[in-house]
Image 1 (cartoon, rainbow, N blue to C red):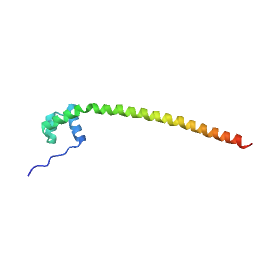
Image 2: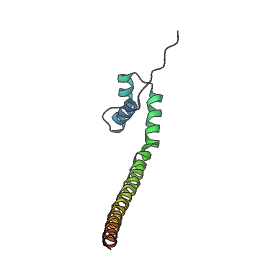
Image 3: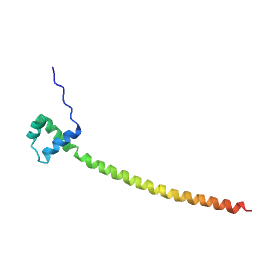
Image 4: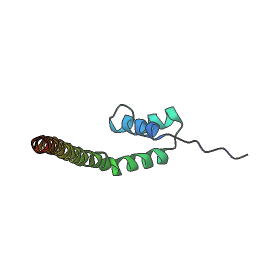
Length: 100
């Protein structure tokens, strides 16, 4: 009967890789403790390092989104002021022409 393959969460993989990269544990110790094959941990480390830049790329995207939100908020504020001014102008013109 074949063994079912174990599924590991992204968090589990990241924690094991960080244990090794930080020097808290050796790769051999992590493999023994969690019954992992060394080539599997090596693949996780390679994936981790390869995709590390994407963590910082999301910061750039987030900053751009925040800038866009601030720009839109300023625009809404400006348009609100313009709308209030237009409403007052209509009320004033209606009040001055209505008394004749």
